[in-house]
Length: 272
Image (cartoon, rainbow, N blue to C red; front, side, top):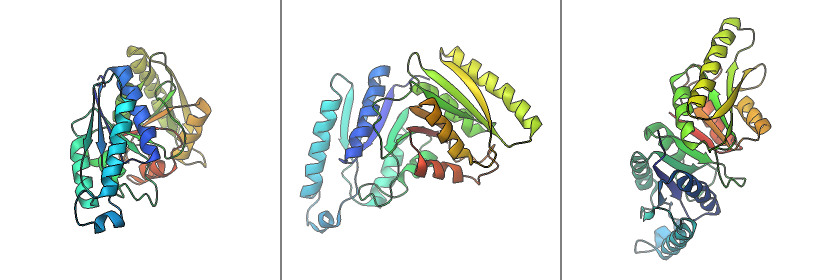
């Protein structure tokens, strides 16, 4: 599937700019339409003002719009203001909006973030039916997809993450497909070896050069193993299935995805 429409969440924070840079680069590479949604929780001081929208909100929205226009020169792009301040108003509307795009770009959840509704990333990933590219709250990521890592397991969500991740792969990318299995499980090891061979062939059919590695978990957790291997590969993207549970016996449903959301060190595409 081609990448034709992208939604990026903006709050006016510094990390909004990081998300916007990645989203704009993807839009340019794919000739895709980019929509920026300004949606942020109102501060206590703003809530106390008698009129809506309060002055602080308007000032932040104007700055966000100006930054969006500057970053999207030459693109088919639109900036929109959700014009809401309550968490209970922002969250359902954001989830509904994301359903109308090929990809949503959001920020990694961060404890104490006053601008983003708690749990928004998880709700979008689970409820939108769309893949979510989550940008870490630290680090500089101007683009993604030149050195992608695909996580593979024999699970529906892994297949979704694999195929959705192909939308983000840059031309001439060097990809890695990582399969993880429990130690001393010879049958599972043999079955996954064949699956990884097929995964590499699938990428080759899409003109993506890739190689595969099969790792035994041992004493290290699944998500830590993926992050370590992504670091070794110099990855700029990790594509995984999210909140599936199947194929990952060491994690209860959603535990690994929540761990990844807390500890990611590279942009992660999560597909549910």
